Image (cartoon, rainbow, N blue to C red; front, side):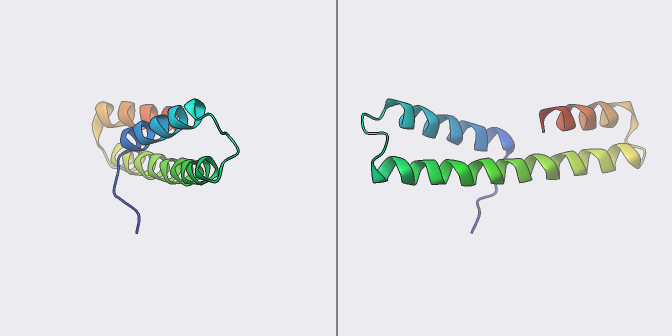
Length: 80
């Protein structure tokens, strides 16, 4: 089961994991390898969330969402 997190929330969790991995004294330990595997999954899930957000924003812009919707779509796509 995958949690329903925003791209910003995924980025925050990934940042915490990166800091924890960097601060660990034993970078080849099983726990660090487990954290790295989790980080890889978060990166993949975050990329999917960004793609979904870009798709939704582009759909709103395409269906007459106005200039704000187009700007939002461009911003989401630029972050992805």
